Length: 593
Image: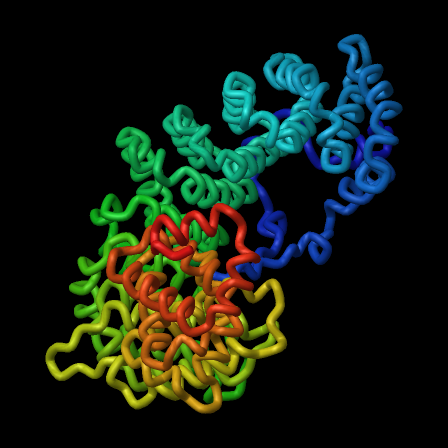
Protein backbone atom coordinates (compact mmCIF):
# COMPACT_ATOMS: atom_id res chain seq x y z
CA UNK A 1 0.00 0.00 0.00
CA UNK A 2 3.03 2.27 0.04
CA UNK A 3 3.39 4.53 -3.00
CA UNK A 4 5.81 3.07 -5.55
CA UNK A 5 8.21 5.21 -7.55
CA UNK A 6 6.12 4.64 -10.68
CA UNK A 7 2.94 5.71 -8.93
CA UNK A 8 4.61 8.80 -7.56
CA UNK A 9 5.90 9.77 -11.00
CA UNK A 10 2.44 9.41 -12.55
CA UNK A 11 0.48 11.03 -9.72
CA UNK A 12 -1.23 14.12 -11.09
CA UNK A 13 -0.99 16.21 -7.94
CA UNK A 14 1.50 18.52 -6.31
CA UNK A 15 1.59 20.56 -3.11
CA UNK A 16 1.09 23.94 -4.79
CA UNK A 17 -1.04 23.81 -7.94
CA UNK A 18 -4.00 25.92 -6.77
CA UNK A 19 -3.60 28.50 -9.54
CA UNK A 20 -3.28 26.04 -12.43
CA UNK A 21 -6.53 26.16 -14.46
CA UNK A 22 -8.43 22.91 -14.89
CA UNK A 23 -9.36 21.49 -18.24
CA UNK A 24 -13.03 21.07 -19.00
CA UNK A 25 -12.38 17.33 -19.26
CA UNK A 26 -11.28 17.35 -15.61
CA UNK A 27 -14.92 17.60 -14.56
CA UNK A 28 -16.32 14.11 -14.38
CA UNK A 29 -19.84 13.71 -15.81
CA UNK A 30 -22.53 14.16 -13.18
CA UNK A 31 -26.19 13.23 -13.37
CA UNK A 32 -28.65 15.91 -12.33
CA UNK A 33 -31.95 14.25 -11.61
CA UNK A 34 -35.25 15.43 -10.28
CA UNK A 35 -35.62 15.63 -6.52
CA UNK A 36 -37.96 13.91 -4.01
CA UNK A 37 -37.04 10.30 -4.82
CA UNK A 38 -33.43 9.35 -4.20
CA UNK A 39 -32.47 7.96 -7.62
CA UNK A 40 -28.86 9.15 -7.92
CA UNK A 41 -26.61 6.59 -9.42
CA UNK A 42 -22.97 6.05 -8.60
CA UNK A 43 -21.17 6.82 -11.83
CA UNK A 44 -17.66 6.18 -10.57
CA UNK A 45 -17.36 2.87 -12.38
CA UNK A 46 -18.16 4.52 -15.70
CA UNK A 47 -15.89 7.50 -15.40
CA UNK A 48 -12.44 6.09 -14.82
CA UNK A 49 -10.47 8.07 -17.38
CA UNK A 50 -7.01 9.49 -17.06
CA UNK A 51 -7.06 9.10 -13.27
CA UNK A 52 -7.11 5.32 -13.69
CA UNK A 53 -3.44 4.88 -12.78
CA UNK A 54 -3.99 6.52 -9.42
CA UNK A 55 -7.39 4.96 -8.77
CA UNK A 56 -6.71 1.33 -9.74
CA UNK A 57 -3.11 0.54 -8.91
CA UNK A 58 -1.71 -2.10 -6.62
CA UNK A 59 -1.99 0.05 -3.49
CA UNK A 60 -5.59 0.90 -4.26
CA UNK A 61 -6.47 -2.74 -4.82
CA UNK A 62 -4.63 -3.62 -1.59
CA UNK A 63 -6.70 -1.10 0.36
CA UNK A 64 -9.91 -2.44 -1.16
CA UNK A 65 -8.83 -5.99 -0.32
CA UNK A 66 -8.14 -4.98 3.28
CA UNK A 67 -11.56 -3.37 3.43
CA UNK A 68 -13.18 -6.58 2.17
CA UNK A 69 -11.17 -8.73 4.58
CA UNK A 70 -12.22 -6.57 7.53
CA UNK A 71 -15.87 -6.81 6.42
CA UNK A 72 -15.65 -10.61 6.18
CA UNK A 73 -13.34 -11.56 9.04
CA UNK A 74 -13.99 -8.59 11.34
CA UNK A 75 -12.11 -8.68 14.64
CA UNK A 76 -9.91 -11.59 13.56
CA UNK A 77 -7.82 -9.31 11.32
CA UNK A 78 -7.88 -6.27 13.60
CA UNK A 79 -4.93 -6.78 15.93
CA UNK A 80 -2.35 -7.87 13.32
CA UNK A 81 -3.30 -4.90 11.16
CA UNK A 82 -3.29 -2.46 14.10
CA UNK A 83 0.18 -3.57 15.17
CA UNK A 84 1.54 -2.91 11.69
CA UNK A 85 -0.33 0.41 11.45
CA UNK A 86 1.10 1.53 14.78
CA UNK A 87 4.63 0.66 13.64
CA UNK A 88 4.26 2.52 10.35
CA UNK A 89 2.65 5.61 11.92
CA UNK A 90 5.59 6.41 14.17
CA UNK A 91 6.89 9.97 13.57
CA UNK A 92 10.31 8.58 12.68
CA UNK A 93 8.89 6.63 9.72
CA UNK A 94 9.07 8.02 6.14
CA UNK A 95 5.98 9.96 5.11
CA UNK A 96 5.04 7.28 2.55
CA UNK A 97 4.85 4.67 5.33
CA UNK A 98 2.70 6.98 7.46
CA UNK A 99 0.42 7.65 4.49
CA UNK A 100 -0.02 3.93 3.80
CA UNK A 101 -0.76 3.26 7.48
CA UNK A 102 -3.44 5.97 7.57
CA UNK A 103 -4.96 4.52 4.40
CA UNK A 104 -5.01 1.05 5.97
CA UNK A 105 -6.64 2.46 9.09
CA UNK A 106 -9.44 3.99 7.06
CA UNK A 107 -9.85 0.77 5.10
CA UNK A 108 -10.56 -1.38 8.17
CA UNK A 109 -12.98 1.04 9.84
CA UNK A 110 -16.18 -0.26 8.28
CA UNK A 111 -15.56 -3.90 9.11
CA UNK A 112 -14.01 -3.46 12.56
CA UNK A 113 -15.48 -0.22 13.86
CA UNK A 114 -16.98 -1.59 17.08
CA UNK A 115 -13.75 -3.34 18.04
CA UNK A 116 -11.78 -0.22 17.16
CA UNK A 117 -13.75 1.84 19.69
CA UNK A 118 -11.27 1.45 22.61
CA UNK A 119 -8.46 2.66 20.36
CA UNK A 120 -10.32 5.56 18.73
CA UNK A 121 -9.23 8.23 21.25
CA UNK A 122 -5.56 7.61 20.50
CA UNK A 123 -6.20 7.03 16.79
CA UNK A 124 -8.16 10.26 16.42
CA UNK A 125 -5.55 12.22 18.36
CA UNK A 126 -2.81 10.92 16.06
CA UNK A 127 -4.83 11.87 12.97
CA UNK A 128 -5.44 15.34 14.40
CA UNK A 129 -1.73 15.77 15.07
CA UNK A 130 -0.99 14.92 11.45
CA UNK A 131 -3.63 17.36 10.20
CA UNK A 132 -2.52 20.18 12.49
CA UNK A 133 1.24 19.86 11.95
CA UNK A 134 2.44 22.41 9.36
CA UNK A 135 5.08 20.08 7.93
CA UNK A 136 2.88 17.04 7.24
CA UNK A 137 3.24 15.91 3.64
CA UNK A 138 0.21 16.94 1.59
CA UNK A 139 -0.53 13.34 0.55
CA UNK A 140 -0.61 12.31 4.21
CA UNK A 141 -3.00 15.19 4.86
CA UNK A 142 -5.10 14.04 1.95
CA UNK A 143 -5.58 10.50 3.26
CA UNK A 144 -5.89 11.65 6.90
CA UNK A 145 -8.90 13.76 5.94
CA UNK A 146 -10.58 10.72 4.43
CA UNK A 147 -9.74 8.48 7.38
CA UNK A 148 -11.06 11.17 9.71
CA UNK A 149 -14.46 10.90 8.03
CA UNK A 150 -14.26 7.11 8.34
CA UNK A 151 -14.25 7.54 12.13
CA UNK A 152 -16.65 10.47 11.88
CA UNK A 153 -19.42 8.66 13.74
CA UNK A 154 -17.06 8.61 16.73
CA UNK A 155 -15.96 12.23 16.36
CA UNK A 156 -19.51 13.60 16.32
CA UNK A 157 -19.88 12.44 19.93
CA UNK A 158 -16.56 13.97 21.02
CA UNK A 159 -17.14 17.77 20.94
CA UNK A 160 -13.51 18.84 21.43
CA UNK A 161 -12.10 16.39 18.91
CA UNK A 162 -14.90 17.20 16.47
CA UNK A 163 -14.11 20.91 16.64
CA UNK A 164 -10.40 20.24 16.13
CA UNK A 165 -11.12 18.03 13.13
CA UNK A 166 -13.56 20.49 11.57
CA UNK A 167 -11.12 23.38 12.01
CA UNK A 168 -8.45 21.24 10.36
CA UNK A 169 -10.88 20.54 7.52
CA UNK A 170 -11.60 24.26 7.05
CA UNK A 171 -7.90 25.03 7.15
CA UNK A 172 -7.09 22.37 4.55
CA UNK A 173 -9.89 23.58 2.29
CA UNK A 174 -7.63 26.61 1.77
CA UNK A 175 -4.57 24.50 0.99
CA UNK A 176 -2.45 25.40 -2.07
CA UNK A 177 -2.85 21.78 -3.23
CA UNK A 178 -5.92 21.10 -5.35
CA UNK A 179 -5.92 17.46 -4.21
CA UNK A 180 -6.02 18.53 -0.56
CA UNK A 181 -8.74 21.09 -1.34
CA UNK A 182 -10.80 18.29 -2.87
CA UNK A 183 -10.33 15.95 0.09
CA UNK A 184 -11.13 18.66 2.63
CA UNK A 185 -14.24 19.79 0.76
CA UNK A 186 -15.48 16.19 0.56
CA UNK A 187 -14.77 15.80 4.28
CA UNK A 188 -16.93 18.85 5.04
CA UNK A 189 -19.82 17.31 3.10
CA UNK A 190 -19.46 13.96 4.88
CA UNK A 191 -19.24 15.49 8.35
CA UNK A 192 -22.23 17.73 7.63
CA UNK A 193 -24.27 14.60 6.93
CA UNK A 194 -23.03 12.93 10.13
CA UNK A 195 -23.71 15.93 12.39
CA UNK A 196 -27.49 15.66 12.41
CA UNK A 197 -28.03 16.89 15.97
CA UNK A 198 -26.70 20.42 15.75
CA UNK A 199 -23.05 19.61 16.51
CA UNK A 200 -21.89 22.14 13.89
CA UNK A 201 -23.99 25.03 15.19
CA UNK A 202 -21.03 26.85 16.73
CA UNK A 203 -19.01 26.46 13.53
CA UNK A 204 -21.61 27.59 10.99
CA UNK A 205 -20.14 31.08 10.64
CA UNK A 206 -16.60 29.80 10.15
CA UNK A 207 -17.77 27.20 7.64
CA UNK A 208 -19.59 29.80 5.55
CA UNK A 209 -16.53 32.09 5.65
CA UNK A 210 -14.33 29.23 4.49
CA UNK A 211 -16.73 28.33 1.67
CA UNK A 212 -16.83 31.97 0.60
CA UNK A 213 -13.04 32.21 0.56
CA UNK A 214 -12.70 28.99 -1.42
CA UNK A 215 -15.38 29.93 -3.92
CA UNK A 216 -13.25 32.90 -4.92
CA UNK A 217 -10.08 30.87 -5.35
CA UNK A 218 -10.90 27.33 -6.46
CA UNK A 219 -10.39 26.14 -10.01
CA UNK A 220 -13.17 24.58 -12.05
CA UNK A 221 -13.20 21.00 -10.75
CA UNK A 222 -13.11 21.87 -7.06
CA UNK A 223 -15.68 24.65 -7.51
CA UNK A 224 -18.14 22.05 -8.78
CA UNK A 225 -17.45 19.97 -5.67
CA UNK A 226 -17.72 23.08 -3.49
CA UNK A 227 -21.19 23.89 -4.86
CA UNK A 228 -22.30 20.33 -4.15
CA UNK A 229 -20.86 20.53 -0.64
CA UNK A 230 -22.64 23.84 -0.02
CA UNK A 231 -25.89 22.11 -1.00
CA UNK A 232 -25.25 19.32 1.50
CA UNK A 233 -24.14 21.72 4.24
CA UNK A 234 -27.26 23.88 3.88
CA UNK A 235 -29.61 20.90 3.92
CA UNK A 236 -27.94 19.38 7.00
CA UNK A 237 -27.57 22.55 9.10
CA UNK A 238 -30.64 24.47 7.98
CA UNK A 239 -31.91 25.52 11.43
CA UNK A 240 -28.51 26.59 12.72
CA UNK A 241 -27.86 28.47 9.49
CA UNK A 242 -31.18 30.32 9.62
CA UNK A 243 -30.38 31.52 13.14
CA UNK A 244 -27.00 32.97 12.14
CA UNK A 245 -27.66 36.33 10.49
CA UNK A 246 -23.97 37.07 9.94
CA UNK A 247 -23.48 33.75 8.16
CA UNK A 248 -26.55 34.39 6.01
CA UNK A 249 -25.25 37.82 5.04
CA UNK A 250 -21.88 36.35 4.09
CA UNK A 251 -23.52 33.52 2.16
CA UNK A 252 -25.81 35.88 0.24
CA UNK A 253 -22.82 38.04 -0.66
CA UNK A 254 -20.77 35.20 -2.12
CA UNK A 255 -23.79 33.72 -3.90
CA UNK A 256 -24.45 37.11 -5.44
CA UNK A 257 -20.89 37.17 -6.74
CA UNK A 258 -21.21 33.64 -8.10
CA UNK A 259 -24.59 34.45 -9.66
CA UNK A 260 -23.13 37.39 -11.53
CA UNK A 261 -19.93 35.58 -12.46
CA UNK A 262 -21.37 32.29 -13.76
CA UNK A 263 -22.72 32.65 -17.30
CA UNK A 264 -25.41 30.32 -18.63
CA UNK A 265 -22.92 28.41 -20.76
CA UNK A 266 -20.52 27.84 -17.86
CA UNK A 267 -19.72 24.21 -16.97
CA UNK A 268 -20.46 25.28 -13.39
CA UNK A 269 -24.06 26.29 -14.02
CA UNK A 270 -25.61 22.88 -13.32
CA UNK A 271 -23.95 22.41 -9.93
CA UNK A 272 -24.54 26.07 -9.11
CA UNK A 273 -28.28 25.88 -9.83
CA UNK A 274 -28.68 22.74 -7.72
CA UNK A 275 -26.80 24.38 -4.89
CA UNK A 276 -28.91 27.53 -5.19
CA UNK A 277 -32.09 25.46 -5.06
CA UNK A 278 -31.10 24.03 -1.67
CA UNK A 279 -30.01 27.44 -0.40
CA UNK A 280 -33.42 28.83 -1.39
CA UNK A 281 -35.28 26.10 0.50
CA UNK A 282 -33.20 26.65 3.61
CA UNK A 283 -33.11 30.45 3.68
CA UNK A 284 -36.73 30.99 2.65
CA UNK A 285 -37.80 34.66 2.73
CA UNK A 286 -34.15 35.72 2.95
CA UNK A 287 -33.99 35.02 -0.80
CA UNK A 288 -36.56 37.70 -1.65
CA UNK A 289 -34.00 40.29 -2.88
CA UNK A 290 -32.74 37.84 -5.53
CA UNK A 291 -36.14 36.36 -6.41
CA UNK A 292 -36.73 38.31 -9.61
CA UNK A 293 -33.28 37.56 -11.00
CA UNK A 294 -33.42 33.88 -10.09
CA UNK A 295 -36.89 33.41 -11.55
CA UNK A 296 -36.10 35.20 -14.80
CA UNK A 297 -32.88 33.32 -15.38
CA UNK A 298 -34.13 29.86 -14.44
CA UNK A 299 -37.35 30.28 -16.42
CA UNK A 300 -35.40 31.66 -19.38
CA UNK A 301 -33.17 28.57 -19.55
CA UNK A 302 -36.18 26.30 -19.02
CA UNK A 303 -38.16 27.93 -21.85
CA UNK A 304 -35.25 27.82 -24.29
CA UNK A 305 -34.50 24.17 -23.63
CA UNK A 306 -38.16 23.19 -23.80
CA UNK A 307 -38.46 24.91 -27.18
CA UNK A 308 -35.40 22.98 -28.35
CA UNK A 309 -36.93 19.71 -27.19
CA UNK A 310 -40.27 20.43 -28.86
CA UNK A 311 -38.51 21.37 -32.09
CA UNK A 312 -36.45 18.17 -31.94
CA UNK A 313 -39.64 16.13 -31.53
CA UNK A 314 -41.19 17.83 -34.57
CA UNK A 315 -38.14 17.28 -36.75
CA UNK A 316 -37.39 13.83 -35.31
CA UNK A 317 -33.86 14.88 -34.39
CA UNK A 318 -31.85 14.24 -31.23
CA UNK A 319 -33.15 16.38 -28.32
CA UNK A 320 -30.73 18.33 -26.13
CA UNK A 321 -29.47 16.77 -22.91
CA UNK A 322 -32.03 17.23 -20.10
CA UNK A 323 -29.65 18.43 -17.35
CA UNK A 324 -30.02 22.16 -18.01
CA UNK A 325 -33.79 21.85 -18.00
CA UNK A 326 -33.91 19.69 -14.87
CA UNK A 327 -31.63 21.93 -12.81
CA UNK A 328 -33.57 25.02 -13.91
CA UNK A 329 -36.83 23.40 -12.81
CA UNK A 330 -35.26 22.37 -9.50
CA UNK A 331 -34.13 25.95 -8.90
CA UNK A 332 -37.64 27.23 -9.64
CA UNK A 333 -39.06 24.63 -7.22
CA UNK A 334 -36.65 25.81 -4.54
CA UNK A 335 -37.69 29.40 -5.13
CA UNK A 336 -41.42 28.62 -4.88
CA UNK A 337 -40.74 26.57 -1.75
CA UNK A 338 -38.85 29.50 -0.23
CA UNK A 339 -41.10 32.42 -1.07
CA UNK A 340 -44.62 31.01 -1.33
CA UNK A 341 -47.39 33.29 -2.54
CA UNK A 342 -45.01 36.21 -3.13
CA UNK A 343 -44.00 34.39 -6.32
CA UNK A 344 -47.38 34.97 -7.96
CA UNK A 345 -46.56 38.41 -9.45
CA UNK A 346 -43.52 36.88 -11.16
CA UNK A 347 -45.68 34.15 -12.69
CA UNK A 348 -48.29 36.64 -13.85
CA UNK A 349 -45.64 38.61 -15.72
CA UNK A 350 -44.91 35.50 -17.79
CA UNK A 351 -48.42 34.15 -18.25
CA UNK A 352 -49.76 32.23 -20.08
CA UNK A 353 -46.38 31.08 -21.38
CA UNK A 354 -45.03 29.99 -17.98
CA UNK A 355 -47.73 27.46 -17.13
CA UNK A 356 -47.74 26.24 -20.74
CA UNK A 357 -44.05 25.40 -20.45
CA UNK A 358 -44.68 23.68 -17.10
CA UNK A 359 -47.47 21.71 -18.75
CA UNK A 360 -45.06 20.43 -21.42
CA UNK A 361 -42.78 19.09 -18.68
CA UNK A 362 -45.47 16.67 -17.53
CA UNK A 363 -45.63 14.80 -20.85
CA UNK A 364 -42.02 14.91 -22.00
CA UNK A 365 -40.53 11.64 -23.21
CA UNK A 366 -37.75 11.85 -20.60
CA UNK A 367 -38.58 10.26 -17.23
CA UNK A 368 -36.50 12.69 -15.18
CA UNK A 369 -38.11 15.70 -16.84
CA UNK A 370 -41.61 14.43 -16.06
CA UNK A 371 -40.58 13.69 -12.48
CA UNK A 372 -39.13 17.19 -12.20
CA UNK A 373 -42.27 18.70 -13.74
CA UNK A 374 -44.61 17.16 -11.18
CA UNK A 375 -42.31 18.31 -8.37
CA UNK A 376 -42.64 21.86 -9.72
CA UNK A 377 -46.42 21.54 -10.07
CA UNK A 378 -46.58 20.49 -6.42
CA UNK A 379 -44.54 23.50 -5.30
CA UNK A 380 -46.62 25.91 -7.40
CA UNK A 381 -49.80 24.36 -5.98
CA UNK A 382 -48.59 25.14 -2.45
CA UNK A 383 -47.59 28.70 -3.30
CA UNK A 384 -49.94 29.86 -6.05
CA UNK A 385 -52.75 27.28 -6.29
CA UNK A 386 -54.94 29.20 -8.72
CA UNK A 387 -52.17 29.05 -11.33
CA UNK A 388 -52.33 25.24 -11.26
CA UNK A 389 -56.12 25.31 -11.23
CA UNK A 390 -56.01 27.33 -14.46
CA UNK A 391 -54.54 24.26 -16.21
CA UNK A 392 -56.13 21.60 -13.99
CA UNK A 393 -57.61 19.47 -16.78
CA UNK A 394 -54.32 18.95 -18.66
CA UNK A 395 -52.53 18.39 -15.33
CA UNK A 396 -55.01 15.64 -14.44
CA UNK A 397 -54.71 14.05 -17.88
CA UNK A 398 -50.93 14.08 -17.56
CA UNK A 399 -51.20 12.59 -14.07
CA UNK A 400 -53.37 9.74 -15.34
CA UNK A 401 -50.98 9.08 -18.22
CA UNK A 402 -48.06 8.87 -15.81
CA UNK A 403 -49.92 6.42 -13.56
CA UNK A 404 -50.40 3.83 -16.31
CA UNK A 405 -47.27 1.77 -15.63
CA UNK A 406 -45.30 0.95 -12.49
CA UNK A 407 -41.68 -0.05 -12.99
CA UNK A 408 -38.15 0.95 -11.99
CA UNK A 409 -38.24 3.89 -14.41
CA UNK A 410 -41.62 5.30 -13.36
CA UNK A 411 -42.01 4.87 -9.62
CA UNK A 412 -40.23 8.15 -8.86
CA UNK A 413 -42.57 9.97 -11.26
CA UNK A 414 -45.58 8.33 -9.62
CA UNK A 415 -44.29 9.46 -6.23
CA UNK A 416 -44.18 13.06 -7.43
CA UNK A 417 -47.59 12.76 -9.12
CA UNK A 418 -49.13 11.70 -5.80
CA UNK A 419 -47.27 14.45 -3.94
CA UNK A 420 -48.43 17.09 -6.43
CA UNK A 421 -52.05 15.92 -6.17
CA UNK A 422 -51.82 16.16 -2.37
CA UNK A 423 -50.72 19.78 -2.64
CA UNK A 424 -53.47 20.59 -5.11
CA UNK A 425 -56.14 19.06 -2.86
CA UNK A 426 -54.84 20.83 0.23
CA UNK A 427 -54.43 24.30 -1.26
CA UNK A 428 -56.94 24.73 -4.12
CA UNK A 429 -59.39 27.63 -3.83
CA UNK A 430 -63.05 27.58 -4.84
CA UNK A 431 -63.05 31.07 -6.39
CA UNK A 432 -63.49 32.81 -9.74
CA UNK A 433 -65.17 29.75 -11.28
CA UNK A 434 -61.83 27.94 -11.30
CA UNK A 435 -62.04 24.14 -11.46
CA UNK A 436 -61.08 22.18 -8.35
CA UNK A 437 -59.71 18.67 -8.16
CA UNK A 438 -62.07 17.82 -5.30
CA UNK A 439 -65.06 18.40 -7.60
CA UNK A 440 -63.50 17.08 -10.78
CA UNK A 441 -64.89 13.95 -12.47
CA UNK A 442 -61.25 12.95 -12.96
CA UNK A 443 -60.82 12.48 -9.19
CA UNK A 444 -62.41 9.02 -9.26
CA UNK A 445 -60.17 7.91 -12.13
CA UNK A 446 -57.08 9.18 -10.32
CA UNK A 447 -58.17 7.38 -7.15
CA UNK A 448 -58.56 4.09 -9.02
CA UNK A 449 -55.20 4.43 -10.75
CA UNK A 450 -53.43 5.20 -7.48
CA UNK A 451 -55.28 2.42 -5.62
CA UNK A 452 -54.25 -0.10 -8.30
CA UNK A 453 -50.59 0.85 -7.86
CA UNK A 454 -50.99 0.86 -4.07
CA UNK A 455 -52.31 -2.72 -4.13
CA UNK A 456 -49.73 -3.97 -6.62
CA UNK A 457 -47.76 -7.11 -5.69
CA UNK A 458 -44.68 -5.62 -7.38
CA UNK A 459 -43.80 -3.10 -4.66
CA UNK A 460 -40.12 -3.07 -3.65
CA UNK A 461 -38.28 -1.47 -0.75
CA UNK A 462 -37.05 1.31 -3.04
CA UNK A 463 -40.66 2.39 -3.56
CA UNK A 464 -41.34 3.30 0.07
CA UNK A 465 -41.46 7.05 -0.59
CA UNK A 466 -43.85 6.48 -3.48
CA UNK A 467 -46.12 4.33 -1.31
CA UNK A 468 -46.16 6.91 1.47
CA UNK A 469 -47.12 9.65 -0.98
CA UNK A 470 -49.84 7.48 -2.54
CA UNK A 471 -51.21 6.63 0.92
CA UNK A 472 -51.43 10.32 1.77
CA UNK A 473 -53.07 11.08 -1.56
CA UNK A 474 -55.66 8.31 -1.23
CA UNK A 475 -56.51 9.46 2.29
CA UNK A 476 -56.87 13.08 1.18
CA UNK A 477 -59.12 12.00 -1.69
CA UNK A 478 -61.26 10.03 0.76
CA UNK A 479 -61.47 13.12 2.96
CA UNK A 480 -63.10 14.98 0.07
CA UNK A 481 -65.29 12.06 -1.04
CA UNK A 482 -65.59 9.06 1.26
CA UNK A 483 -67.66 7.25 -1.39
CA UNK A 484 -64.44 6.62 -3.30
CA UNK A 485 -63.65 3.92 -0.75
CA UNK A 486 -66.74 1.95 -1.80
CA UNK A 487 -65.43 1.20 -5.28
CA UNK A 488 -65.98 -2.47 -6.07
CA UNK A 489 -62.55 -2.99 -7.65
CA UNK A 490 -60.50 -1.42 -4.85
CA UNK A 491 -62.70 -1.10 -1.74
CA UNK A 492 -61.40 0.43 1.45
CA UNK A 493 -60.68 -3.00 2.89
CA UNK A 494 -58.24 -3.63 0.02
CA UNK A 495 -56.08 -0.63 0.86
CA UNK A 496 -56.55 -0.56 4.65
CA UNK A 497 -53.54 -2.68 5.64
CA UNK A 498 -50.98 -0.85 3.54
CA UNK A 499 -52.52 2.52 4.36
CA UNK A 500 -52.04 1.90 8.08
CA UNK A 501 -48.53 0.51 7.61
CA UNK A 502 -47.24 3.44 5.56
CA UNK A 503 -49.05 6.37 7.18
CA UNK A 504 -47.99 5.36 10.69
CA UNK A 505 -44.34 5.99 9.73
CA UNK A 506 -44.92 9.46 8.26
CA UNK A 507 -43.97 12.37 10.48
CA UNK A 508 -46.79 14.69 11.60
CA UNK A 509 -47.70 17.21 8.90
CA UNK A 510 -50.93 18.62 7.43
CA UNK A 511 -51.04 16.01 4.66
CA UNK A 512 -50.96 13.22 7.23
CA UNK A 513 -53.73 14.75 9.33
CA UNK A 514 -56.06 15.18 6.35
CA UNK A 515 -55.25 11.72 5.00
CA UNK A 516 -55.84 10.03 8.36
CA UNK A 517 -59.13 11.86 8.81
CA UNK A 518 -60.21 10.84 5.31
CA UNK A 519 -59.47 7.20 6.06
CA UNK A 520 -61.31 7.38 9.39
CA UNK A 521 -64.35 9.03 7.79
CA UNK A 522 -64.48 6.29 5.19
CA UNK A 523 -64.25 3.62 7.90
CA UNK A 524 -67.12 5.26 9.77
CA UNK A 525 -69.19 5.39 6.58
CA UNK A 526 -68.62 1.73 5.65
CA UNK A 527 -68.49 0.25 9.12
CA UNK A 528 -65.65 -1.10 11.22
CA UNK A 529 -65.90 -4.52 9.59
CA UNK A 530 -63.46 -3.26 6.91
CA UNK A 531 -60.75 -3.27 9.61
CA UNK A 532 -61.33 -6.69 11.13
CA UNK A 533 -58.59 -8.39 9.14
CA UNK A 534 -56.18 -5.55 9.77
CA UNK A 535 -56.64 -4.68 13.41
CA UNK A 536 -52.95 -4.83 14.35
CA UNK A 537 -51.85 -2.37 11.62
CA UNK A 538 -54.76 -0.14 12.62
CA UNK A 539 -53.71 -0.25 16.27
CA UNK A 540 -50.20 0.73 15.20
CA UNK A 541 -51.62 3.61 13.18
CA UNK A 542 -53.76 5.02 15.98
CA UNK A 543 -50.78 4.77 18.31
CA UNK A 544 -48.84 6.95 15.85
CA UNK A 545 -51.74 9.41 15.75
CA UNK A 546 -51.84 10.07 19.50
CA UNK A 547 -50.54 13.62 18.96
CA UNK A 548 -53.25 14.56 16.45
CA UNK A 549 -56.02 17.07 17.10
CA UNK A 550 -59.08 16.34 19.23
CA UNK A 551 -61.38 15.71 16.23
CA UNK A 552 -59.10 12.95 14.99
CA UNK A 553 -58.84 11.38 18.42
CA UNK A 554 -62.64 11.43 18.84
CA UNK A 555 -63.07 9.62 15.52
CA UNK A 556 -60.48 7.03 16.53
CA UNK A 557 -62.09 6.53 19.94
CA UNK A 558 -65.48 5.93 18.33
CA UNK A 559 -64.08 3.38 15.87
CA UNK A 560 -62.15 1.56 18.62
CA UNK A 561 -65.27 1.39 20.79
CA UNK A 562 -67.29 -0.07 17.91
CA UNK A 563 -64.57 -2.61 17.14
CA UNK A 564 -64.41 -3.77 20.75
CA UNK A 565 -68.17 -4.08 20.92
CA UNK A 566 -68.83 -5.78 17.57
CA UNK A 567 -65.68 -7.89 17.18
CA UNK A 568 -64.66 -8.88 20.72
CA UNK A 569 -62.70 -12.01 19.76
CA UNK A 570 -60.66 -10.28 17.06
CA UNK A 571 -60.20 -7.32 19.38
CA UNK A 572 -58.73 -9.43 22.17
CA UNK A 573 -56.45 -11.37 19.81
CA UNK A 574 -55.06 -8.13 18.43
CA UNK A 575 -54.68 -6.54 21.85
CA UNK A 576 -52.62 -9.51 22.96
CA UNK A 577 -50.19 -8.81 20.10
CA UNK A 578 -49.58 -5.22 21.24
CA UNK A 579 -46.69 -4.33 23.50
CA UNK A 580 -47.24 -2.71 26.87
CA UNK A 581 -46.47 0.81 25.61
CA UNK A 582 -49.10 0.58 22.87
CA UNK A 583 -51.69 -0.84 25.26
CA UNK A 584 -51.06 1.93 27.79
CA UNK A 585 -51.37 4.54 25.05
CA UNK A 586 -54.67 3.10 23.86
CA UNK A 587 -55.92 3.26 27.43
CA UNK A 588 -54.60 6.73 28.32
CA UNK A 589 -55.48 8.51 25.06
CA UNK A 590 -58.56 6.62 23.89
CA UNK A 591 -59.74 5.07 27.19
CA UNK A 592 -59.76 1.66 25.55
CA UNK A 593 -58.42 -1.50 27.22
